Length: 346
Image (tube, rainbow, N blue to C red; front, side):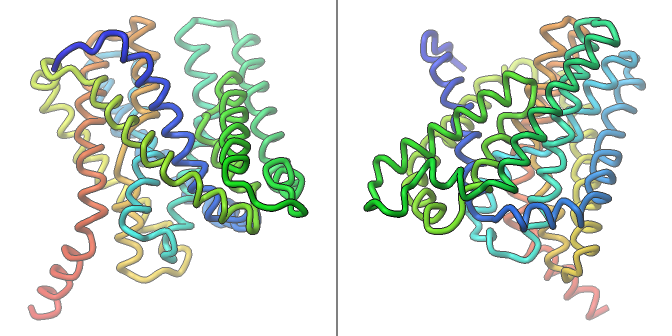
C-alpha cells in the first residue's frame, strides 16, 4: 500500500535468494537416481501438464483479442506452477516423505526444464530477434542445462567434496557458506544463460548426497525460512491493489480453469505411478499454486510493451492462485474424505 523506496531492491534480491534456498533444500531430500527415475516415469505427465495448463491462457488471449505473441506469454503464465510456494507448502504440511511427493517434484522439474527452453524463445520473440540468433540463445541455455544435469547425476561425489571434507571435523559455518555459495554460483550462471535459477539450485541439492546433505539441511533451514518469507513479501509488492478489480472476472475464470487442469495433471501422474486415490488428490492440489515464474513471464511481456492489460490480468491470476494453492493443499484431504463418505452413504 505504501512505497518502500530504497528497500525494494534489497527485498527483490532477498526474494531471489529465497527461491534458490527453497529449491536447494528441496533437492537435498532426493538423490540423483531418484530424480532420473522420476523424470523417465513422468515424461508423459510433464507433456500433459504443459498442454493442459497452457491452453486456458492461450485461449483467453485470443478471446480478448491480444494476438499470438500475447497468447504465447499468457500460456506460459498459466502453465507453470510455483516451485517456491509448493516447496514451502510440502515442507510445512510434512509431506516431503509422502509417496506422491516424488511425482509432484518430477512434474515441477519437467516444468522448470521446459522453462529453460521457453524463456529463451520468449525473450527472442519479444525482442524480435532473427531465427538464427534465437536458436543460438536456446542452444546455449540447453547446453548449460545438460552440463549441470550431467555433473549432478554423474559426479555428485566430487560436488559433495567441494562442500564438505569427510576427513575433517564438521564445521557448521563452513558447511553453510560453501553450500550456499555453490548454490548461488550455479543459480547465477543458470540465470545468466536464460535457464531457471531454481533448476540450478535444485540440481545442486540433488548433487549433494550422504551425511553432507543432512548437515546442509540442518544449517540452511533457518536461512531458508527467513528468505522464503522475504520472497512472499516481494511477491505482494509486485501487485498494485488498484489493478485487481478490473481484471478480477477474467482472472477468476482463468484461476478456476487452472485449478481444474492442475488437479487433472496431478491425478493422472500419481495414478500412473500406482498411488492411491487420496495421494492422487494431494498431488493435484499440491500443483495448483502459481507464483514466481508466472510473474517473470508477465514482466518480460509488460516491459516489451506487448499488451498493457496483460500485466494486471497476470497479477490478479497469480495472486488468486498463490492463495488458492496452499489452501487447496491444506484442505484437500478433509474435503476428499467428506465427499467420499457422502458418496458411500448415498
